[in-house]
Length: 150
Image (cartoon, rainbow, N blue to C red; front, side):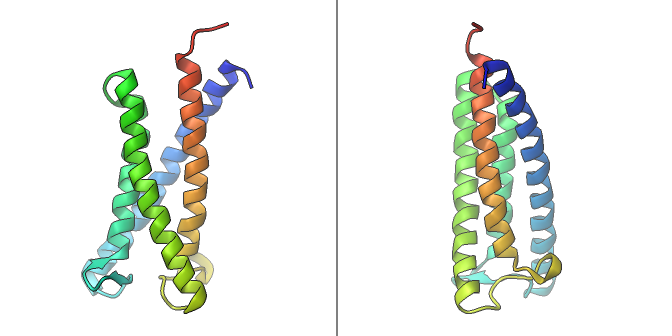
């Protein structure tokens, strides 16, 4: 793929990723709010921290990392900061989704139910894979835009 195509694909990936992260953040905020109101909307880790609050924070970090590519600071620090924000959020969300999925698979009844009765941790794990692929494509596009033309 030539640099122009990579740059365009990166911009499209960034838009899709941003939209998906906002949807995920909205779902996380909704679940977190239900947890605050009822106290039983999501599992509590270590008897102290609801998993949905961690997931919401992770989605927020990924969204900030993605947004920073467009609007943050100087070019070099913008990419590094974006990778740090996105990476921290992605590792948190993916780790939580892997743990939840493993427990859901082995014990059942661990994760809140999503659309069609599918456990949310399964959906979150699938979303994290998609987010990782899209962010890698965004970074390739960012690099292609920075490199001098042929």
